[in-house]
Amino acid sequence: MISDVLTVCHGNLCRSPMAAALLRHRLAGVRVRSAGLAAEVGQPAEAKAIAALSEIDIDIRAHRATQFTRELGNEAQLILTMTEAQKRSIESLYPLMRGRVFSIRSFDDADIDDPMGLSIAAFRTCRTALLGGVDYWVLKLTKLTGQSRDSAGSNAVSIDGDKW
Image 1 (cartoon, rainbow, N blue to C red):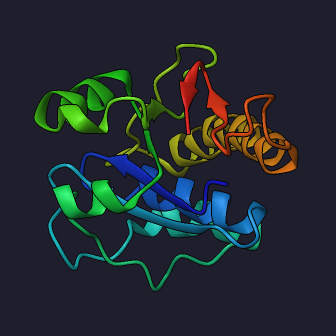
Image 2 (image 1 turned 180 degrees about the horizontal axis):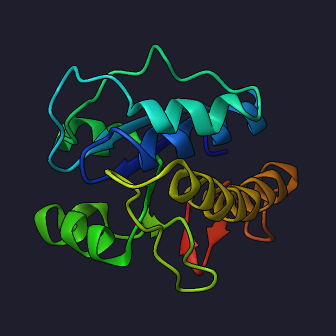
């Protein structure tokens, strides 16, 4: 069973904290954290990200930016990036993480655009795009937790062809 998920974006101020909060809201019993590939550690979430999530009763005011590290990546059983380029970057830096790193919108090959510096409308658009990815992964993870052992008796399950 997947019990530790890490969401990753560039600065860990908008997209990945929003994604983590949305996942946390929908996945009971799963530890969900977020980090940035170039985070300014300790910075609060962008005010418009806080506002966009508060509109749907999710509070991320306590969020503080965290830098993606090998240790964080190794602890996570599933790493969800906001773009395909971020996925490739992590896999290039940490080849042993391959098979655990996916773009949150891998099902439709869409990247989640960075709304930093844009209007609240851009943050709402980001929230909507993230919700599509969250819905996909919640369904996928929920199906996995409901699966029994395979015919060989292994506890491993498959996500997009990779054993877990």
